[in-house]
Every structure is written in structure tokens, then in C-alpha cells.
Length: 90
Image 1 (cartoon, rainbow, N blue to C red):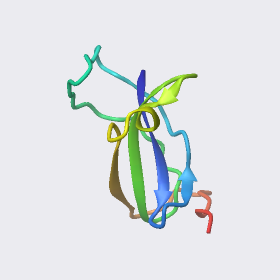
Image 2: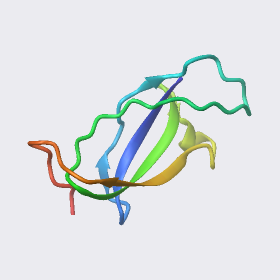
Image 3: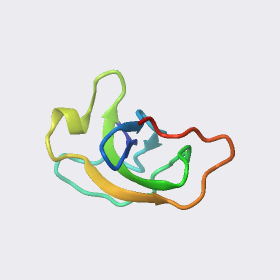
Image 4: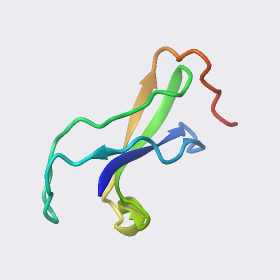
């Protein structure tokens, strides 16, 4: 099980599906919480987005799909684009 993310435009259009993975720093029992940094790769042009964070079990499922309310979506503001980044669809 690893932490990962999806990136969406403000209207919900997918910009990046299946983002970089971050290994959990320790086993996390069911119902417990932990705080740790998440690895990310910036690949979106400047703008406002929705960052959907979730746990994923490779080859099995994203936890937000299997367990409603287990992921979190937060607003994300990218203030400068990396050279060569693609425009979001739409």
C-alpha cells in the first residue's frame, strides 16, 4: 500500500491520473492516522487544480474507490509551470 494522487482541473477534468507513489513510513493499522510528506512530480502549467490524495494497493484498487471518504481532495495552486509542461485538457 502506498500514498499517491490524481490531479484534476477545477471543473473535475483529469489532468494527471496515477501520480507518483510514496511508501508509508510504517505499517498503519485500520482506522489510524499518520502525517508524512508525499512525493509529487509537478507537471502542470500554472493554474488552479484539485489534488486528490489516496492510498493505493498496486494491482488491486485505489482506497477512495473501495472505501468512500478514505481519500481527500484539496485545492492546489501552481504558480509557475515547468518548461515543456502540457496544457490541461479542455
